[in-house]
Amino acid sequence: MRYPRWRFFPIGRLASVVGFIAACGGGTLEPLDDAGNFAGTITAEGIERTYVVHVPPDNSSVGVLPLVIALHGVPGTGLSMQRFSGLDEPADRLGFVVAYPDARYGEWAVGLDDPTVDFLPDRDTEFIKQLISELDGRFDVDRRRVYATGISNGALMVHHLSCEMAGYFAAVGPVAATMMEPVADRCTPGVSLPIVIMHGSEDDQFPPEGGEGEATTFLSIQGTVALWVGLNGCDPEGAVAVEPDTADDGTSVRRTEYAGCDGGAEVVFYDITGGGHVWPGSPVAYTPPTGQMTRDISASEILLTFFLRHERH
Image 1 (cartoon, rainbow, N blue to C red):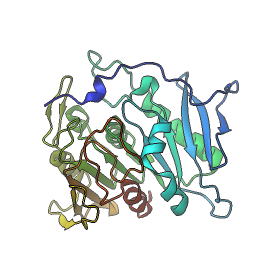
Image 2: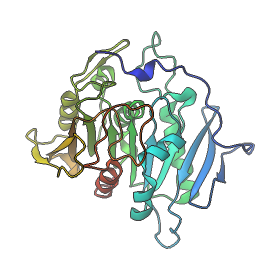
Image 3: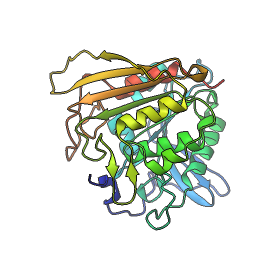
């Protein structure tokens, strides 16, 4: 197995997403356009961090809104995650605030916890905690309905966050990444956590069979699903359904739902036969291509609809 390619991209300091000066002693938030997009900064553990946040333009009468934290892969930024995920359109329709934070140096500290190979100390969990608090203060978000999703390196971060700070989230949705064994071995969320997982059978960045990488070992995708089924106390026999094959794009999608979980949790797995290392149903083409993208489902629609079913008790 090849180690996922995100480890090989050159890492450089990210430029600020917008050209403005941070206010002394606190975070900033500046409008990017008239479509509900803002660029923000906060200071986490003494380091200035950046993010983009999208707020439904017509939200004055809906009260507190749920929040989705959407984490980019490598290479990537919050702005690129916003563009290729297409989360803003269903978020406007369904009433979500979506935050797209930037990883420091372009790569998330995903809990590898090995100083010989992991050059990033784990400051990102604190950053995400502070970002949630910052956005709650600015937009009065519903803290019972905070969610996380991400792709690739961002999905690894979702797994890490789910293990380390599960109590912050009502549900999560990693896309296109299996779980690292070191994270799985010490994963004790303490609460049941609804999770929807999506993975392509032809993902050459995170092969479904898992295995040894350059710096760590990865579970298979079936092992990743089984771990969350066990952590959530679900019935290990899932109910399988085949999604309609409407796009004629060489892919097919099988959905497996695990019920009977503790605390009303769910585990749902979308197994995309023929799918590559992509965000299913993305509104933009990947350049360069990273495998076939299914049009039979939309990851963004599925995630937000799934999230709406769950809130923290």
